[in-house]
Length: 290
Image (cartoon, rainbow, N blue to C red):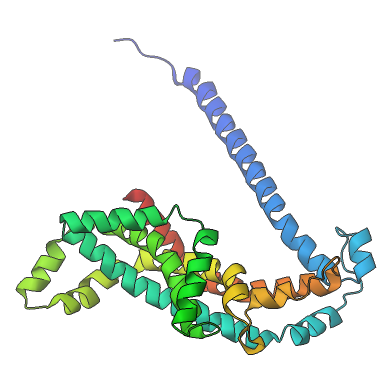
């Protein structure tokens, strides 16, 4: 039996550990550089928003040594911040709730009841993913006009729900296909009707996917300018994006006016993401695994 001295393996192990440390250090440096590049636009936006217009244009990367907090006060007043945020929250939350309930029920029916019509319905929803919003703006406007829903919260909520439904049904369907149907069958044996099965079994199982989809809907609705600009005409119903758009002039704009409105408009989204981030990561992880 041949034996090899341990001294011969130590240099190899030491070289392997050194190689691992170097790889870890390089990966960390690349991640730090990527994070810095990602945060650079955010830093510029905040730094320039605290400067005068000329200082921000001449030295956008410099620190705001003399912060102009009056820029935020003016932006808060000019964009009617509380009213515009309240309007956006009403539209966004209503759209998210309506989309999640209708899309989850539709996806549950499509996945669990495999019939020819359910496959056709699923294909129609998937085809809706390929339709640009600009194609449906005119039909949406005409339909809401005939229903007397222009410049109303229900009208724009229904419009957003129609636009987010295809992706929501596609997303929930993919998630439900990996969920075993035995739990629902057991609930049926225990005497649960369809609504109780959906409410007590299906909807809780969709919690990670629901959190991820909620973030997607919030981002899409909160940042959208097209539909509010076309479907809302009253000043008391303007959203955050319309308030930001109002600060841009016909030919020029002032960074001291525009960037504070952008920062104020992003703050609610940042808060929502902090609240839901662990659910979003869980949803992405589960979806990737499935």
